[in-house]
Length: 228
Length: 233
Image (cartoon, rainbow over all chains, first blue to last red; front, side, top):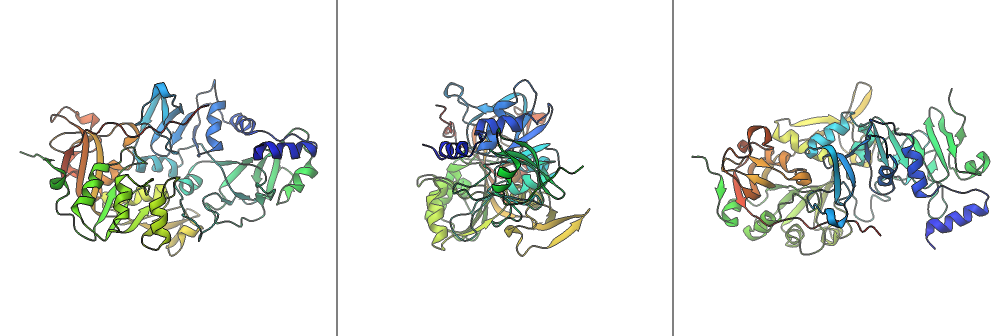
């Protein structure tokens, strides 16, 4: 049994049904209006692109693609096209390509409507940690996360609500090395959708069957009422 | 007559000194001048500082073999860790290879700035993080920024799709990545190109890098980078 399936089973015992990863991605995609330019991080964020059909949303990849399509099929092979995760991807009609400095000028200059990233931890003030679990062990790598976090007009995080061992990932303060300060405006988890408001996490939506009390028990920061 | 074409890899790499700062293009395997890196191994310069996005994977690609020679003192890089970055991992952990970890956009802008004659700039990226350590911070428009310095290099190794005898260049699809900015930021810019075309064939609107930035062009028609298809089951 996969970890996700095991967790789903455990959660169903507690009387609610967490969203699956495709459901999380679809829930996030629902909130992207037509016309936005969106950068998706590697991993779960990339799933979001599968759920915007029928709307023209432009996907930017920080290695210089504006108008990225889906992953290539073997018969489409064009090895000169890769996304930020170095996977072979397609372009959509109308796409363009720029060099790295222009791509990050576009990001830092506030021309990207939305960036979606994964995270290890998100704090109630919008701080988040997603690039390393230790500054001393292992080989660090940062990529474009810090640039995207400060540059995009809004940053949404998509991640599991709790860690593999059941620990909370939504916290009053991050314990891990930060990626950026006060950068996150919304979090989509397998349990809930939360806004980062002026006083902390505000619940926007919850998985079917979940109560506020149960959600609070699984969250390491105080859930607050939606700011007026 | 201006003619920047060289006939051999030895001629392309001639004169690279010990202690050089060397920029290398590429985002993973795409747009990565691996034949020039091979040439740098042959050429023998040591005590090098390499600057690029990645630190290679596996044990056979030229970048990894260059690291393994022990002639690289330091690498300035945004994403050294990858599933196969074994040689970098081993050498870094053993203290044989210094790493300066730089956010990808800051890395690109530090290179661009060098080519544009800007010695340093302020950016909001990495403020308040571990990568801000030791850097000057300053507030502009109510937001904190870090001072970042340009990376001026001795040598840039670039991969182009087309080149003419003036050194005018085009890049193929996402093979562009860091190559155009690196071409501007070094005293000696060396290009490996898939195709040599006649002067005028590229056309003024389609020239990605004007030849003024380029010193040497070597024709290396090696074909395509390794595919990176994701299995869809």
